[in-house]
Each structure stands twice: as C-alpha cells, then as structure tokens.
Image 1 (cartoon, rainbow over the protein chains, first blue to last red):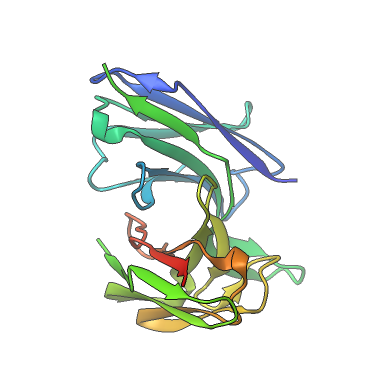
Image 2: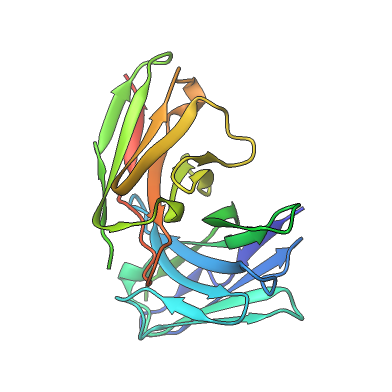
Length: 130
Length: 109
C-alpha cells in the first residue's frame, strides 16, 4: 500500500526557515518515471504547485518561489524534504506531498505516460506568525 | 509559464443533473499532461482523470474528461451528493512550473 505523510513544525516565525518532511512507503521515488511533488494551499485558496523531484534526482521549482525552495530525497530513510527560507505570514498554508508518476511500465513492458499525482498525504498545516 | 483558467468559478447544480467544467490553457500542450483532481473540505485532493481522458483507479464512469491543445473539459454525469466539491485541473507538461487552475466549486443548488 502506498502512503505518504507530511511532518514539520505547525508554527514558524517570520524570516525563519521551514523544513518539511514527506515520509513515504510502498514505492520508491528512484523507480524510473516516479517522483514526489510538494503542493501547498493557503486557507480558502487554490492549490499551488511548489516543487518536484524525480527518480534521477532532477529538481523542478515554482518560478516565484525558486530562490527560497530546496527539495531533496533520502531514499535510505524513505523521505523527501522541502525547505523554504525566509518564511512570511503569506506562506501560511497546508502543505501536501504527493507521489508523482510521469510514466510507468505496463505488463507488456511498454512505457505509458501518466503525468499526475496519484497518491497524496493528508497535509500538514503551517502557520507563520511572530 | 502555462496559466490554467477554470470556468465557471462556481457551478450550482442539483443531484442527478450533469455538469461541465472547463480548463483553458494560455498555451497549447499535449493532452497527456492534463489531470483533474477533486478536493472536499478538509481533505487532500484526489486524482480523478489523467492524460485528459483516463479515469484513475476507482473513479466512477460518471466522470469523464476530454479536450486537447488549450481547451479541456471535465464532465460529471448524474451528480451524486458526494460529487459536490472543488475541482482543479493541473498540467505537467514541458517545462516547469507545473501549474494548477484556480478551481471550480461545484455546489448543490
């Protein structure tokens, strides 16, 4: 069974660095075609895509947050970590991680595109306040 | 950056009716890269459709997706009470960032 669980501080102060951990089970993000995405959602607002790390450790970031974000994975611990520097009250949100599949190999050995986030964690809420 | 614009912002329908949600992109991309998600209050989003028209595992056939290029549609037939939620489209093609639309809220009329 594939599961993901986000963890991290519920409260951070402005200017601090946030570190969030996504602990996963039931799959390996080092499998060709797979990866993990971080998404956030401020209260009452839409989903915002933040960052993606794929199977060969290539990393992709939100344009507007690129200078503040770092995504990394530790397959020995089954974890993907997201750090966000210089936190601001506008960063108050629920942060989700999700298994992401770009492509997979079917039963016949053919690679098929998927390009979606099929399993999500339940999210962790972060409030930025002094 | 590809901007996804969803319409309408809110759709009011009754159970049993059908609804059509639109997702329009600022530039064309392969339909392989378009997905739809459903989110209920207090819950994580759930994948409904990938590759513009493929239902994810466990998604009932009253959900269908279509479209290509810059125009994509999610159709929900025979609305059930549990279908009232917020729906997001998402693109995962080409260069990042891999953006979401702003969502359509499907509410009970």
